[in-house]
Length: 402
Image 1 (cartoon, one colour):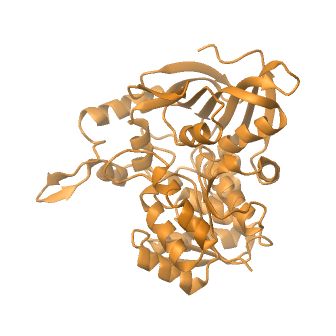
Image 2 (cartoon, one colour):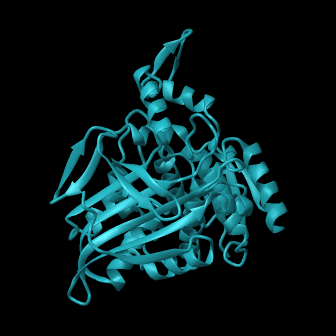
Image 3 (cartoon, one colour):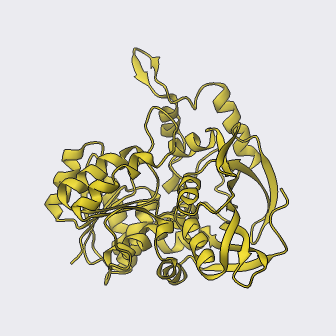
């Protein structure tokens, strides 16, 4: 019998364990752990009230390998679902190796002292996981995660070759706050303020942060301004689908968000290097995170929809050139009604549950470290339709004109 340990009790962790509890035949034994156990207990109360299922809770500091390994051994976890901070990916992977547990996460490792989003640190673990007979599945969120599965599903069923790929992430929700982020503020702001990179003709093309923008009309949301950014699935997709000549990632932001972010950058509040304040070191961005609204608290007030998908152009299986748009639309209020969380957490937490289900049921198997696009997309796509993230595909007249 599988025993799943979920580490991280934020919005994504909350959605994931709610959805696991709704699928007790797959997840009969669930433990939720974080540095602050009271957060886990609050999620467990919600899970019990909404599903009638009791989950276990525990306290763990995932910065420490030994403490994490001790908890894995104590509960006999067969699978660890890492929904904590990406700084902790490597310590949790080490703990899994030392205890014989399979590993899964939703975001790649990054060091605390540099906003550097690369897979090489985790890919370096491949041989160790392979030799141990263990599987590590990386990036089972929406982006990365579902967007990679969308791409491989299009390749499997519609294309002989994909030439260009655009990943479009639109959050059309309104939470009523002057400034707030819909997932961990520290990670969100580090991503947004990093140099933008996209893959084109075998090389990286860099542009200043938030310097390239375009308009796009998103179904169920409307026309929004989206900005060219770097996102980790570009690295894994260009590695595992090297045929793709150009891969870009776009994310929408409102004018108020951009204005606030520019001011915060200008006054130094997004810095990730330490400064001395009243005789002690603090990280300005971590202080900013402490005073911003907790993302998991935004569900009750957020209204609107998200629209996330991929646009692929290439040689179709019928021999013609086609452009196909595969996407999901998720409603913030529906997500809150089901799990008590807004749609940004929902669209990451549901794929986390499905990725874990793929591993627990041995639908996806392998010894070593794997990204989502290396797996058969069909069973994952089927579960998306069954568990709250239905998708649709349509043909466009041609690729994006920009």
